Image (cartoon, rainbow, N blue to C red; front, side, top):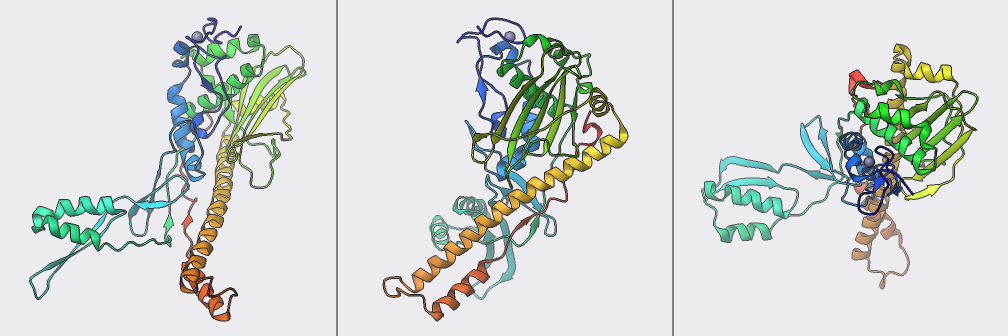
Amino acid sequence: MAKCYICKEILNKSNSSIEHIIPNALGGNLKSRNLICKSCNSKMGLEEDAILAEQLNFIASMLDIKRDRGQPQPIEVEDKEKGKKYRLLPGGKPEMIKPEIEVVNKVDEEGQKKINIIARDEKQAKSVLNGLQRKYNISNQQIEEILESIEIKEEYFKEHLSFKSMFGGEKALRAIAKIGLNFYIYSGGNIKWVDDFIDKYLSESFDILSRISFIYLNYDVVEKQEDEILHSILIIGDSEENMLYSYVELFNAYKVVILLNDSYEAPDLKFSYFFDVENRKERNRKYKLKLSQTEMIKYLKKDNELYKSNIERLITEMNNIMRIIYSRHQSKLINKIIKDAFEEMDNKYPQEDNPYITSEMVSFLSREISERYVTYLIKTDRLEYLNPALSY
Ligand SMILES: [Zn+2]
């Protein structure tokens, strides 16, 4: 019978809680009722999970990660040149936040003032009009008329958009450590080897970051297929080095090691889990990871050089993920451009009358495509990190 790994109470239907091993906000769907009781659940870092989710929300949102409940939060981005802010909806579609209202100061012959309004949708346009109604003495009838004559435009983005993101810090690392710990217990690991870690994790006086660190090795720990985005969890029990540790990768980019026990005295042990984030499927992947006690200590110690290189590597990995996301968006965009252009051609040259594509149609199509082909970019060179606490 499963016991809560914190308070050791026997778990049953009424006192157990569903624990996501990788937070659902990050797309994780591995979950268990056999880890933790309801009252201990609140002790195990809900705030930390939220912070981790917030840090990785940009990726989750741009990939439009599926979750059990709700959608990823939209991201606020900025066009620095014009100082305008937009919102990127899950999947990356940009949307205006504030409407633009321009009152043309000239009065025309009939004594009328002109006001240009750009709004993101009809609802926003209506609320802008209602706001202006009293000041400019616009009748309800006129509002109706204006709303009926709205011009709807869809544009591709030409501007570079940038966003700010924070990453690292103690709380995010604690949340990742919990992933490793949960997975060890979920996989049937003997609780006695992690009891001490759990005590330390829960103790406010213990510096738990002496057990957790970002880690970027000079080889690929998890072998991935091209442009695949994985969440990976490894548990390694190494009888020679007397260590039990976990290695967690989130979105290929956050790579973290957690030393669960440094006096492990049991046979070698390996558990692994690889989750394809976009296709929501568990995968089998090859991996290699072998750390000596000395290397482990080096990573967990606050060594300046390593700290700096960890930051560099983290930024590189984040940029790699952005490159994958960008290429996904590019191909989506290209599909849309082609689909739209063909629709236009179909309108102009209905298929029933034009069973074969003529040279006139070819020119039409190529003009349509090139006019539409204005790409939008998301710049990634403005990633900012929460400095004092990347690995500690
Ligand atoms: Zn409990």
